[in-house]
Length: 202
Image 1: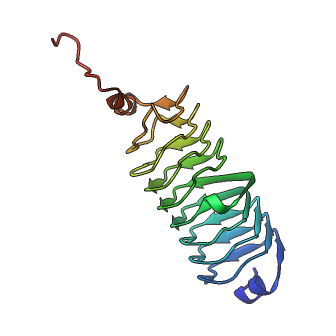
Image 2 (image 1 turned 180 degrees about the vertical axis):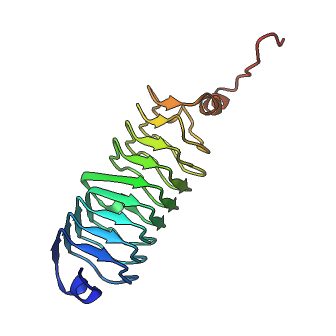
């Protein structure tokens, strides 16, 4: 298992397991990680600019305020991670592929990104920016979206049937063929300024 000294000294890692790394604020720019597992590590404020992660998994890691300028994220899974203040919009969008399971995601920027088919499962997503993102066929399963921004966002075919706390204006976003619960669908109707009355009421 690589230690922090080896992590800093090398540029490329294949099939490596990193555990309990104290890498907060470290300069980790320009590195290549393939099929690596990062477990219970602190990468808060770390610099991953120009790095590439391919088929990697982060489990129980803190990546808050990590710097991802021109970072490549290809088939990367985040599980039980904390991500606050991360600007994903400055990642390399080519072949971008990520998924989030049981993560705490707060004040992150996903604006303008091609996030088709991305999966958010049992996550708390708070005050994040999805403006002009392509969320076609995205799954927000059992996920809270309190305070998130959706504007000119492509949500065609997205699954929000078990999502909660979202505020999506159907006049400003493409929600064709998206899935909502009955309660979620009611929240969309308020933008049309109509009244819904139960049967028998006048």
